[in-house]
Length: 287
Image (tube, rainbow, N blue to C red; front, side, top):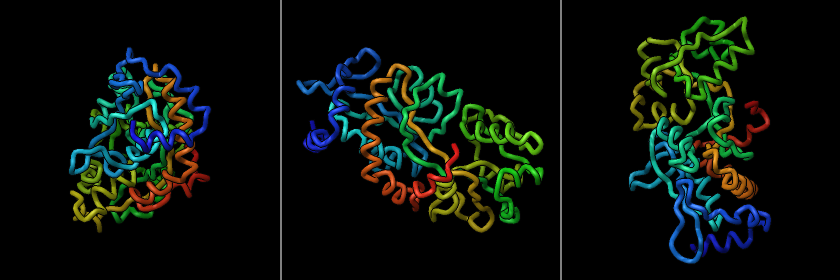
């Protein structure tokens, strides 16, 4: 057991110890570490290509906002050892549901449908700026109501992508001014290119993805920085997804994440990876 984990665990609340009793079982896909420390290894799936939320860095290591928050949580859970496994969006969802992974992080939003497949902990892991990518000449369109009123076409969104649910919920609340929502065949499409080519008028995208693709100097669409814009329409809570058999692990995770938040670690990581402290907008978050 790492010394840092021992020291931090000693300072952690005594209540977490009770939650961890008996959690060394390995009959649900996890692995018990060798030795006398009885540390349970759990597999944490993360999407490899979603920088800066989750990604694999140039050294082959797990990185990103969600990953770093979970590493801080791991330091407070001495009887767990997190093994980060890079994968795709689809494999993460299927793998966590089937128990291949005990938990997954992918900038996941809450949806009613997913509660039937996964455990959502009580504590959300982060916040995501979500908006529309539009041609510059349509920059006056700031909200989903504006977009619908303009009669604009929206890039298709896979039905299992939580962004689909965001638009569907908007349409349910605004039956007289709905957005034409179409389900895509894949989890995501190349929305920046679709908008630039005029195949659609706009698309839903998270700010982190827009910045990675367009704003960053080495982004694949940096040459379009003067042609497309990102207009935020919501800041949304994001969550880790736990396998349905991992309630004990999820409870322990909750207690540790509370401590991590009290230390303002997510605030600092938000600034580091997103360029601003999204937690300052928490009072405005509706979802």
